View 1: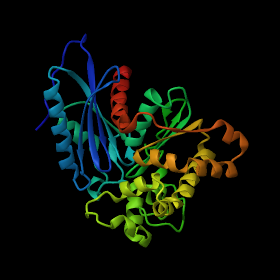
View 2: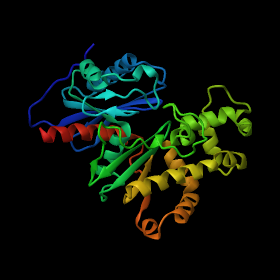
View 3: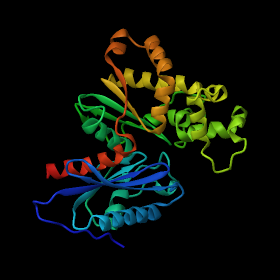
Length: 330
């Protein structure tokens, strides 16, 4: 069933939808033209859903928001997708970072547009999160920035003169697929030793399942417990075994930062995502020492590593910004 929407006069305030398809959660937000988040719906555990089912879930969320805010003028939806996309035609690539193979090579933008009955724009989720940080968060006063998100997966965005650099087809910024250990574990993309296969939530899940040193996590716990969260909470509290498990990630994250700084020479790397924040808290001294040992002094002195400010709503805000920017260009 298509979502109905009503227009108002040109004097009325306009609203856009930001839709963030995450690795484990779907977030749908209503954003005003002043870029204020007016309302938000979050659903969990959609990792097993096929495109049709998830798009139906998106439509249901939009219907709920419209019911709560009747009479508003919705001008469109900006959708963040957790993988590389062909930006010009709104289709997905032949693999996805976090979702099943059913999401490969589909005309996702058109599918969502047809379902919800609104003008729809599709971009990589990290591009949209980074866009929000550039406009409203840690990148407001910067021009050349890399945004890096570490959560269930790892993604990124490149900003040159404050504009998203998407590359030839739209897949630039897939930092999760930098190879940081040629002997590392297999990634979902088919390569070995990708950054995402080592330091993401999915990578940590694999470490926890396969490493005998993680047995302390399973005492008196249910099978459905979030062991990644428990591991990180213990590490933050100084638990020796937990710190021993995750300490190798410090070098891997440092190596990823080093590659980014050498190749792109940004003013700053803005780090977001639920795990990104934790890793900065735990590893900042190690990362700084590693970079000082491997980079020229000039780069160290003039490059900043910053924490994202907008939290887990940056993708929603970025989706709305994409819509409002498109409206201005028309």
